[in-house]
Length: 375
Image (cartoon, rainbow, N blue to C red; front, side, top):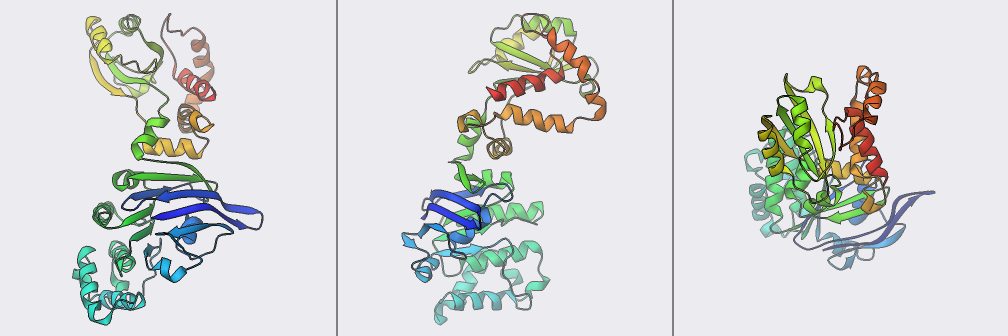
């Protein structure tokens, strides 16, 4: 178990870590996320005893890492972002050296090295010089070194950085396997990796903890929109008439015509909270002879939740809602030509009401989302 209590690290007047507290339970894989400069690396350096905190304490299986560093560090295997490898050593030589440093007995050393190379799938390169290995194999050798001595806790800082997609998948599978026997604290910028292997996620920003929860719960908390995006074929007037027959619709935003095929209309339908209009929508469109081509429920990804939390947060956390942040992202991506149409779109907004034409422009989508985020 890792216990971080009221951790502070100051550099002059700047607090890189500011009163940070969290616990990593035994047997869990916990992701450690934050934007650049959030204090992740500083926190990991304090957890591993590499630097001392200004205030607070770190307990490794109940042992204060600053009071009893040698005893606490026996329980930690650390893989930094750039593994401290010796390029002119062979893989087996390097791991034997690490085993000696970690005080693995001489009689058990060869067995331990072979066992860990087997777990990390580095046996086939055991006699190769480290400098001749690929990035993926170097990461595996670094991880093998962290595992030496069978520590209870593994702390992995960006273990998949610089790897190609196949190597990332292999590293993900290896971390999953290690989680059966180790507590793992994993830092990464790759959201897919975090959501794929982690039981819980800690998100920090500006040296403070924003949230700690499961990936599923974090995304659920951030969902502040309910509705569907659909693509419909047929007459737009009939489509609007069909929509007016459905209760529970709060707002409608039409896609830009150039983004849809000829004679099709893309639109996002926003609904009242906990309202599911999909069945009613299907039948209403069928009755209006407007075939439904696509239907997707609005969802929030872990990446969206991360951006929202670290750039202001949801209303739950006292900041802006996700809709506003999504709107900002989309606004930045618009071309100059689209921006020149803004005045025309704003004029059409004034006449677009759900009880009337339900003809909301793309610009209104941004406006509605921005207003929703400020509430």
